[in-house]
Amino acid sequence: MNTDSQTDAQAAPDCAICSNKMTFSFANDEARYYVCGTCEYLVPVIRDLDSRELNNEIFSESFDENLDVAAVVTPKRRRKYTRFLGRVEGYRKNNRMLDIGCGGGRLLQVAAEKGWEAYGVDPAMKNLSQQAPEGVTVIPKLLHEAGFEPDYFDVVHANEVFEHVEDPVGLVQDILKVLRPGGILVFRTPNHRSWTKRAVGTHWRELGVAEKGHIGYFSPNTARRMLTDMGFDDIRIETHHFSMRDRWSVKTPVVGNVMRLGYRGLGQVARLCGAGERMTVYGQVGSR
Image (tube, rainbow, N blue to C red; front, top):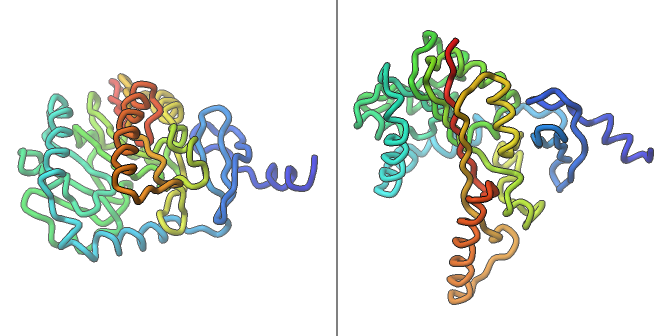
């Protein structure tokens, strides 16, 4: 075993999903990345990283300090959130929904308009917690610090949260405490086994610790393994989107339009193959 291989073996963490030893996958200018050969979980290794403080800084600046923009629900977003709420309407029983990492609270606004008791948790959103619109409650803490009663929610939603979390299994354990039997967890996260990532490699836009706060990456296999191991039923995973603009940008309008049409077509094929860049995961809590 050469020196580099010895270093990688020593630095390799245990997988946060299935506890197996991870192996070196690739490196960029910021970090060395390790992947689990069993469940495909991918992580960057950086010494002395305080991920909670890093993410609080990123999202406080991006959202909480810019609520005049971050809290605005555009017509396009309203249509998107309305479609999502329609998909989870059948789970409404307690009439309470939780959005983890709620950002500017846009989904919560639309949910409240539809009659939901809408709650959000996000440690970066101190200003929003004091200015939340009617029908919306935002708690500027992590989920396990928020003090919710057991089985309180019908729906727990987390958009682009799991890639920021050091202990995804711990987060799901906290979710299970507040999500009622028969309730549903929905989360969205980048798919590192997507065709986009395979095409652009280390140029993939989702890679970035200091800039984006991304410290863990799922594939469909990762998500299914985690939720199955934790007792979820009716697990469904959807993926969509394909692009190579991260590596090859085209400034000529005509060529750009042609490439967008091509990306759109490949995105549809990627969706059918489970290889889209963006992944939405649904898991229903079984009886307990």
